[in-house]
Every structure is written in structure tokens, then in C-alpha cells.
Image 1 (cartoon, rainbow, N blue to C red):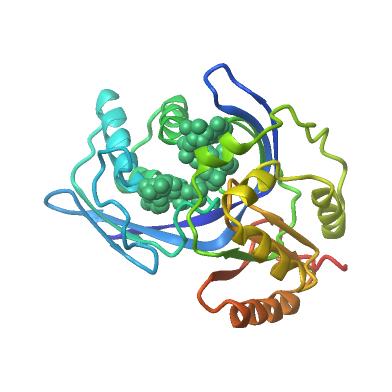
Image 2: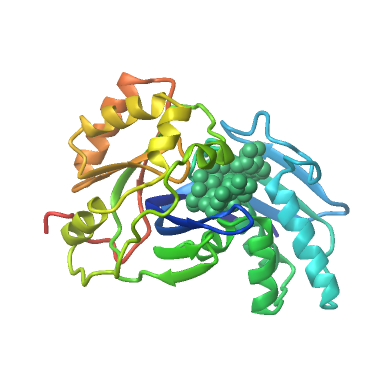
Length: 301
Ligand SMILES: C[C@@](CO)(OP(=O)(O)O)[C@H](O)COP(=O)(O)OP(=O)(O)OC[C@H]1O[C@@H](n2ccc(N)nc2=O)[C@H](O)[C@@H]1O
Ligand SMILES: Nc1ncnc2c1ncn2[C@@H]1O[C@H](COP(=O)(O)OP(=O)(O)O)[C@@H](O)[C@H]1O
């Protein structure tokens, strides 16, 4: 029987760079939520391992596990299988299909989401229960964003993404995610970052309404947005178009180039999507309801 897992987009609602480790990796504080749709990973038993892809953004993605740019779905399969075999558990051949709906190298962690969805699907498919520490270790080994993509709920992360605290009170937001379909290289953006010791976020305030959350998020930053704008000029253009729709908050996610806009009502998000799509028909726009507490709260309530 085939098993399916959604690989939602990761949205860095805010991202502060607060320092740099000795190995060059930057220390981050980030507030993250996830979309309600994204890529789709399907696994089923097969006589031998197989991998296929479909979807708007599958072209050009590697179909191999190895190499410097191997597909994270296959790397996730292989590292999980290796870890299970070390713990004496079996991991027989599987056919995996990836429906690639999210743009690649775009700051919304599509590859990380795919790897996390693959791990979740294979754990279910293989009825495997590795030690939690094993899973944490292999998720981080696959990429700094993968532990948070395994969680898939509103959270704050620090370190390089390994210290995670859930934000169960965060509401669901009406959101548009947009991308000008120009890939942005994460290392290049970090290289252009001049100030590495930026102000931390401070303690999470007591927030009791969606409007309160929007106001707090508005007071935060994405410290990678200025260097990303130097690398890719369309980010400024996209951000300007989104601000013109009257969104409550517009910001870049991750290392870009994707930007998100949060709206007070579903109708505003829908109208903005129509406007943005008409303005830039070739670009990527996706309306979503972010995961969060309840099917609530228009921010005005
Ligand atoms: C910036 C973030 C924010 O969520 O998201 P994305 O833009 O990738 O979505 C992540 O921290 C991205 O983490 P991850 O996706 O693992 O980055 P990788 O591609 O492995 O990192 C590529 C390179 O970026 C630099 N890098 C990455 C993460 C970090 N905390 N400090 C860094 O300096 C390093 O040079 C690293 O070799
Ligand atoms: N399944 C995958 N989906 C997207 N990118 C992948 C995948 N597997 C490997 N990659 C590689 O990972 C890199 C980062 O991709 P992605 O996770 O989409 O970036 P970002 O975190 O900036 O959104 C790309 O260079 C891409 O070639």
C-alpha cells in the first residue's frame, strides 16, 4: 500500500543572525511556520529501489543520491536505511515518488521538507522505531533545516537550527508565498552578510491575538534580506509588489529569493493572489493557510 506525506514549505517569519561558529556556520534565531501544502512524497514496497519525479519544478533536479548535489529524498532514504541496519532493523526496497511543486533553492526549504517527509514516510512504511537520538542526529546530518522540517509546526529555532522550541500559541495566518523563479545560493548570501553579530530577538512576549503576533513579527527582521537583495535584484521588485497589496507583513524567507505576505483575511489574500499573478504571470505564487492554532482568527478579531 502506498503511503503519502506532504512536504510543506518552511516560512522563516523572522531570522536574526546573531554570531558565527568557529567552523564558519552562522548562529541564527528564527521564527518558523509551515504552509498547508507543498511537495508530496509517496512510498510503496517494490522489488528493488526506484525513484521518480513529477511536478512543475522536477526538471533539472538530480535523480541520484550521490554527488555534491544529490537528491535529498534519496540521501534521506540511504542514511535512514544505514541507521536502521546498525540498530538491527530491516529496510527493504522501496519505490519513492516526489511530486515537486515548490521552487528549488528558494529559501522555503523544499529540499529539506522533502527529506523530512521521506524520513516520516519511510519510518511508517518500514514500521521502524529508531532511538529518538538517532533520528535527531541523522536529520541534522542531512541539513540544518531538516530537524525543523521534521517538526512541521510553528517553532523558534536557534544554533544552526538544532535547538527547537515549539510555539503552540501561534495562530494560522492567511499567506501568499512568492518567488521570482531565480534560484539563490545560500552560501553566497551568507558570504555577502557584513554584520554577523546582530541583535537577538529577546524573549517571546505574551501574545493573545493574531494582531499581537503580527505586530511582534513586524518588529523582527530577516538579516539575510539585505545581502540577498544584493545577490538577486528581483527580491526588491517582488517585495515592493507584495507590499502594494496592503499585506500586514511582507518579508523574505530564509536566504531568499522567496518572500511571504501575511493578510488579515482570506479574501484579502485571494484578491492579492489574483493581482500578483496578473502582474507577473511567469512567477511563482501560492496562497496558503499556515499551520497554527485552530482554524481561527482573522487578525482583526
Ligand atoms: C538560511 C536557512 C534558514 O532556515 O534556510 P534556506 O535559505 O536554506 O531555506 C538555513 O539556515 C540554511 O540551512 P541549510 O539549508 O542547511 O543550509 P545549507 O544549504 O546546508 O548551507 C549552505 C551553506 O550556507 C552557509 N550557512 C548555512 C547555514 C548557517 N546557519 N550558516 C551558514 O553559514 C554555509 O556556508 C553552508 O555551507
Ligand atoms: N528534493 C529536492 N528538492 C529541492 N532541492 C533539492 C532536492 N534535493 C537536492 N536539492 C538541492 O538542494 C539545494 C537547496 O534546495 P532547497 O531546499 O530547495 O533550497 P532552500 O532551502 O533555499 O529553499 C538545491 O541546490 C538543490 O539542487
